[in-house]
Image (cartoon, rainbow, N blue to C red):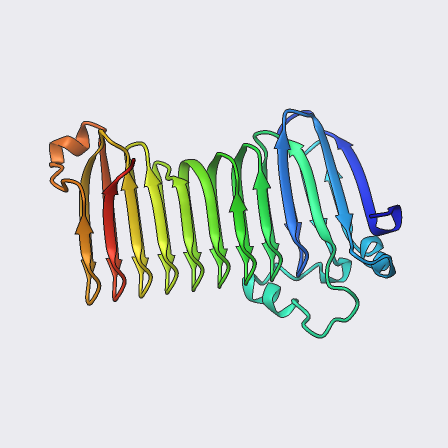
Length: 269
């Protein structure tokens, strides 16, 4: 990729920052490291679409520790009215090359907010908080994050460890979390939900036709409230944690409700 296909900007930060990305169809990659630099790279696959790089807004306010990237300057009001506007801005008939891809490197412990219509989002490195709103793009969080808030229509969500809370609202995308945090709330229509739990936590899952599978680390008690109209409920471990067990801090409280999906609780290997 040559210089005509990229726009690169570098800023100095005094510590963790708050970053906001608004795009339509471009993929978003966020990388956190121990560097104090904030680097923003916008890229297009064809040099003929260089105008898309020039039209993007990149604003860093050092005193506030805030970064904002908008891949289309004329879409300044796109997110004020919320998620539906982001979908409408996903111009299917735009033959100008769509939106540039966005790559951001920022200090560890930062927070990010991403709004996209169809672009995929990938987050690498330790963040304090990540929020992603997407219509059809998938979301991948490769490393531990403190708080994770996901809203997607059909994109899949795959995350590593979540220390504190995971909130996910999805229509048909699947949700997979390698290590659920203290509080997990998932609402989905048809996507499957797969969670691993390694510490005491409260988990609430509501789905219509998606299957729910929870793998619980050895040594943790389980207190479960699960219902399904036509799905199957099964477990490979005891589900008899008492109220006193829960107050001792070694229990996982699971509330799982589905219409036709199966609910399975198992012991993690």
